[in-house]
Length: 471
Ligand code: NAD
Image 1 (tube, rainbow, N blue to C red):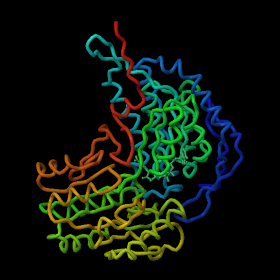
Image 2 (tube, rainbow, N blue to C red):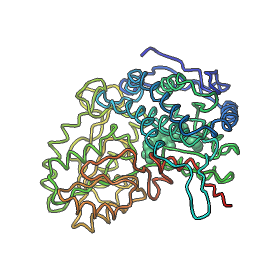
Image 3 (tube, rainbow, N blue to C red):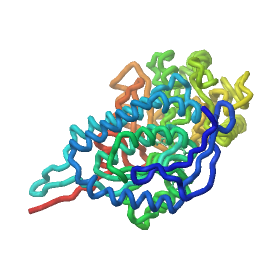
Image 4 (tube, helix red, strand yellow):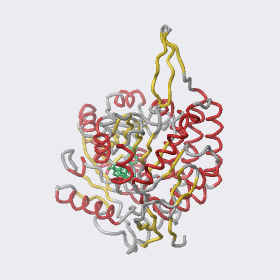
């Protein structure tokens, strides 16, 4: 990819030069070199985007279900037509391993899934003598992180539009190249102007302007718990509807009846997903005390299946960290784990052998971890996994739930009835048994992992207000 300057934002159906003038460097994390710059939007641009969304709201909120399905189909096709270009930007700017094609495919899938949801969704129902109409909440602000840029933009947009809302999207400034490609695709779908607007800028500038603005009725945010709390406070004055998808410290519970080869591989897949730059990463691996030695023997071997390296090498499972700052942060947690008395089984500080440039981390597995250590309590957002031991089922559930978070959990067992019993005791928005997955099921967190749910009908309801009409 050539050095590029992104100097357009998308407002009212057009690519326009931002009023903001700050330039922000974009990097290739595999080399540590700059690949370009993005010119950031400011408060004036945010105002213009909100005004455009507000103008477009009456007509869009009055569209029929069929018209919305048709629009989503056009968006889906437009994004599908740019799939390879999107994926290339994801590899270059985020460092996703080339085997992770789902990072682009999921953006296309987000529209397809929302079409399925919409087809089956009833916008009115009867409660006694009342007709309950599910009305769009209004102009929505969609604020997304850098770790899956095109997917978050597509998923939040598909859901908001399906509800009849118009939107202002504020993607992360660190993923501006990916945003540019997906914005071009979305523009090509030819939706009415102002229905969606995309304004890349700083969180404390554009993000704050959105969360405070009286004409914004809803904020759907994905990102860190710290920023989620700020948004919660900022949105209080105008009492906005909020969906907050925040961090996690998800447990992978390996039950004593599990086939260890399969379970350890499954736990590592959950832990190293998206180069561990994933809110759903299963970073605490809970194993029965009685099988610890066996687990460690298998784990040492299986770590070799998750090499870190050049994202364009098909053998690579774990790409670089997105930025130097994230690299430093992960290094500090590896040092902290040692200081806290945990034992490194595989990996450790520094870069992997032969990778002197870029933000690569050695995939690291700690054993001897207790749940009071900071490496077991704080989200690291890098390939650093911890093995903790439990005595019995009750103890496993106790450790799993002993966290501020509650986004996801993973259970591995050869006894499904037993695994289900454990699952129903876990404080987590999603529990995957032996790698189970359902994209239309609600996604979101208990406790400090967030508020509300995304995806499917639950996600759609997040952009709707019930209006009871009684005669
Ligand atoms: P972040 O919270 O720093 O930023 C997320 C977005 O919020 C960015 O667009 C940022 O510019 C914006 N922002 C920052 N300050 C803001 C403010 N004061 N007001 C409004 N917006 C503001 O997160 P990140 O570093 O981009 O992403 C990593 C984090 O995201 C991790 O903690 C991870 O767990 C979380 N995450 C959660 C989910 C989920 O669905 N639960 C998914 C992916 C990532």
